[in-house]
Each structure stands twice: as structure tokens, then as C-alpha cells.
Length: 115
Length: 115
Image (cartoon, rainbow over all chains, first blue to last red; front, side, top):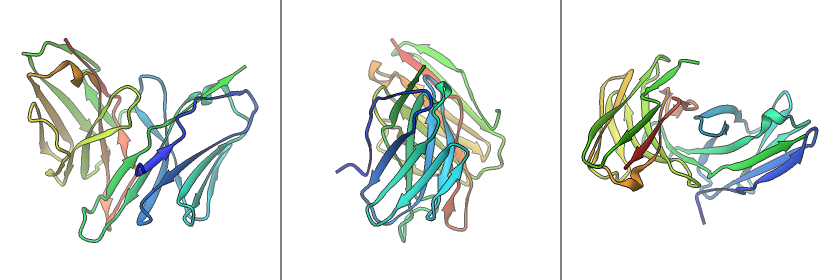
């Protein structure tokens, strides 16, 4: 099983749709979680952190399910500009490990929003 | 956004050339990273520098040689590369404190083509 796994998609949705992605992780010691978006031929950019209680930023909602070991990203009212690859990042902090932890990226989920 | 800048943006080099990639961060972070991103593959961590000390080398071939002269600058020296080394090379920085890592901030990357 991969340490961090995402459905690569692509997800093709019309404008205005609601779409959700999941990201599963294998190590229950994982402690920090983030979503990034990456536009074609550009660098990844932080979209939002994922907090234990769930968090929302405008049309975007992130949730963490520790029991089932996954994080999710929900996008409401999709815009054409939301078309991108969405990457999840999981950080594990192990006793005796490095202070910056072990960062693992998912392979990304491709979203295409069409008119 | 100029938090993390990378040069050059594009690089084409022959297998016998020697070149260097440069990264500079203006965020006051204490950790810097080199990642490789190949088509349809997750981001691969190459090197990590924490407080200017190299703390991780993910089995990267010796034809890649990192250098971190201070906490704001990071270089990746390249020599005798192979065509399979063609990829997007991303620099990132973060702040490590209290045993936790902030989200990574990425530079805009260098797209490398080895001919």
C-alpha cells in the first residue's frame, strides 16, 4: 500500500458543481496534513491546511478522518479557474526522527471544470 | 510572489555539461528542500537542509550535488546527467520550530531537459 494515495482522476465537472477528493494515508502516526494545488507547468501552491475539526475557506472545505486515515477536500460551486491538480501532503513526526518530519506527497488528482 | 525564487526557469544541457540551479528564499525559513517532479509521478524528495546542515539525501545519484552556503540560498550542481534526469526541479522552504514543520513554500521550478 502506498504511504499516501490519491485517485488520479481526472475529474471532469461542469461549472457550479460540487466535487470532492479523498487522500488516504497508511501511517497512523501522521500528524500534519495539507492540500496544495498545482497548475499545469507551475509549482505547487498551498491551498489550505487540514485541521482535526475540519476547516473551511470560502468554497473549499477540508476534513480529516483519523479513524479511517484519510483527508478530504470539497469544492463547492466549481469555477473554471479551479481546474488544476490537487496534491495532498502528509507529515509524520516520529520519535527519534528529524524535527521537520517525513513529508509525503500524493500523486495528485486532476480536476477539469468545463463550461 | 517572490518568497522563493529559482533560476534558471528553463535549462537544456548535454550529458557532458556542468550546470547549477539556484534557489533563494526571502521568508526567513530555516529549512530548504530540493524536489524532482517527473511526468505522472509524485514529487520526489532529493535533499533537505535544516539550519544549513544537510539532513537528508534520498539515495540521489552523485551526479546531483547540493550546496547550502547559508539559510537563504540553495544550489543544485549538475554534471554528466542522463536523459532520464529531465524533469521539473523544485526548491522549497519551510520553518521548523517546536518539533513541527510549517507548510512548504515552493519556488517556480527549473524545467530541465537533458539531451
